[in-house]
Length: 253
Ligand SMILES: NC(=O)c1ccc[n+]([C@@H]2O[C@H](COP(=O)([O-])OP(=O)(O)OC[C@H]3O[C@@H](n4cnc5c(N)ncnc54)[C@H](O)[C@@H]3O)[C@@H](O)[C@H]2O)c1
Image (cartoon, rainbow, N blue to C red; front, side, top):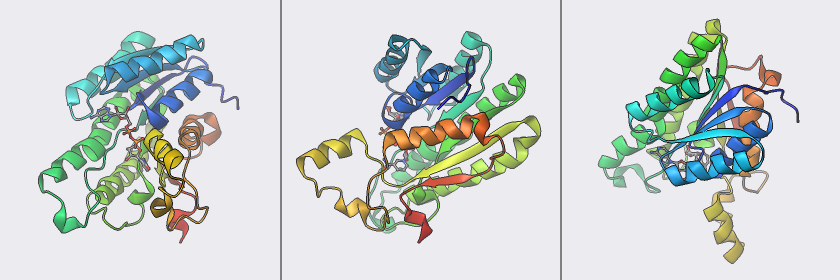
């Protein structure tokens, strides 16, 4: 697919692994100059190295999304290195607990909202300022199918992702006037490297995760990356404020 992104600048926060790394590589293949940010400097460098080895352009930075100064420095790096910011993906998220709400240790509330929700707020805050200077842009946040429907034993994860969906929609309204589009994607269970390794050992390992998924399969990380790319592209120029399920039909029920 030719998305005509030559000389655009893309920031991938959480680009050191999984769907973030694949997204960084896809944006580079479409002609973007890429800034790869991750708490793991080593993995961020690896992504940037892969892009450069493939003939692309990329820099990397260590960024802990729980630290506002790291996010500010990351957005600054895009502007100082490449002169502007056009696209940004806010991908980082975690899940501390798979248990009923009353069993969740109270300290995990702050951990979950810091990593999943406050990070998205901070990312957008600095990205929007940069995109206003650039005359517009596109932000895509990583929410989850669990940001659209409640799930068993996800009493903390669900609200952190519902909040990401809400922030996405509010920001889409506020910044349409600046030609900045803001969307989020809502994947069902993704086929991470860890999940793939477990499935290789035991093909039935993932059955529990597929209950309630009409297509009865995991979501590929490259399928998620393709959605990031599409939503940033001009082909999605009329789309803003959307929470796009990529979930095998999970939330259709
Ligand atoms: N795995 C799933 O099935 C699934 C489904 C829907 C949504 N999601 C969301 O997708 C995103 C990625 O999930 P994943 O399971 O692929 O994650 P992951 O564990 O592979 O992490 C992605 C990247 O984030 C980085 N990271 C972790 N903490 C960080 C921090 N504080 N600051 C900066 N970088 C940090 C990691 O180093 C890694 O490179 C999350 O937001 C998650 O909620 C996952």
